[in-house]
Length: 334
Image 1 (cartoon, helix red, strand yellow):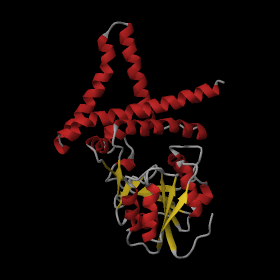
Image 2 (tube, one colour):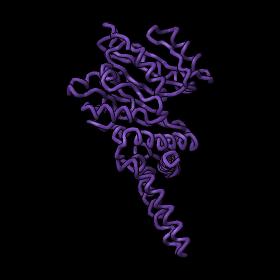
Image 3 (cartoon, one colour):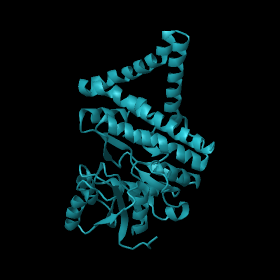
Image 4 (cartoon, helix red, strand yellow):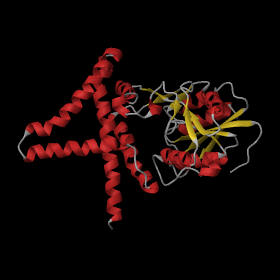
């Protein structure tokens, strides 16, 4: 890794590919960061975008020397992260999403949070989800709901304290010399795997509710399903690598889906329709109970789509997890 330079405090790394819809507002929000006790550099790691993302980045670069563009011919997120880390000159390294707008004090709050405990190696803030379409707005609500994402602390905008990981983490750069870089074999969930290695070494991750960011969620059911299917699928690879006992939260969707299918087919076999519909009925009634509060607070348009968003989150992750597990078992038995 490059040696640190005295004048650069923090390097913001933005992996991106085909993000023309969001990249400009993301980069501008990073360049407008305030109250930093040193210089900022921004590295946009572009995976050979084909939608005009590179043109937007070049235009922004021409107006601010702090922005640099680096090519990522592999087009894979963990590769982009590692390219950025190796090129970073800052004392701190921030991995920042291209679907996100950051509060002007995001980085300064994250950096100041390191002073709380010397074992803190990673800081960040809970994600504030934002939707553009009506479906996206329903997804944003589902991603901040207990029924949507369980006890994932970084998904609740008011959370403050230690957590498993940060959505848009800021690291002490020196920590990568001790735990290594992102695993480039993991197309998804590479951040969870790195967080595991980090906490295994005794380091801590701290989230501050003052470090605010606005994440733009997927706008269509298909895009959301694909995103969470991949999360579930690549979770299995992380478990395999470290022979991990997975958390109950990560197993719930798959266990539920298998249970649901078991009782549906059992009811058909024994000719008892109530057995087939009991679990789906309880499931949908539970979602509807949560949905009543959504409708009251956020209106009927979002409320109608909220159950669909929750169902996609659950079933996409579950099917992805089971697909990954099935592939693992097939390879093991060959």
